[in-house]
Length: 233
Image 1 (cartoon, rainbow, N blue to C red):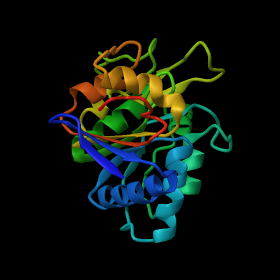
Image 2 (cartoon, rainbow, N blue to C red):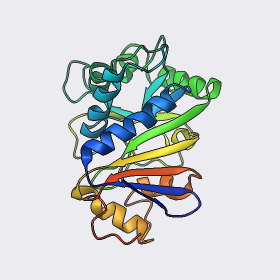
Image 3 (tube, helix red, strand yellow):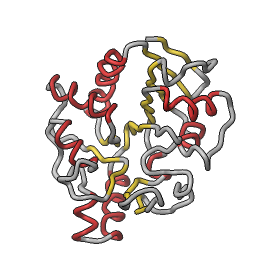
Image 4 (cartoon, rainbow, N blue to C red):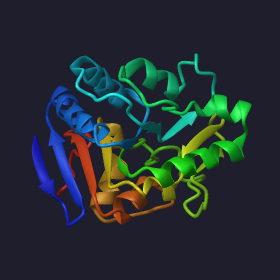
């Protein structure tokens, strides 16, 4: 692993071996989970990390975990981040965590769910948000055309024209409450949005993760060497 302090607010951790990234990052997840409320994402990279965490069995009980976003599909659907999280991260969650966004929206409605998330964020210190980066530069469900950066709400429902389903996402305002934001990026398909960011070609609208990475005061990147190929740091 190579560690680079890019600037006062951004640390970059680069791995030649993806399995080393999974193992070392799992320790950070555990450390932050044991502090208190954390936000996590879906996807294949965190799924591998969650399985390592589950095997280590050293996460304390009653953990408070929120999903950064989810596809609004039935929890039995393979596209559900809630399904992936609860099946892959075998820990003892605090009562009511993680929140099944699809079910609560269906049974209680959008205002209820938004208010529930708002209260959780107001009553709990948010230690870390562990977020992915899409090949298009989105993070959570903050996409270029539907980032809703100025939303006053803690969360929102969104529909992308390329999706057959709605999504539910924590807002930019909510994610920025984190004490630290950790971005995970594996593979060359993540190279373009990362290259633009580190070359200072920052575009909040085109690459939404840029806005969080540029404006938060404590950001860590955990990337493999393919994601950062040909990027001068």
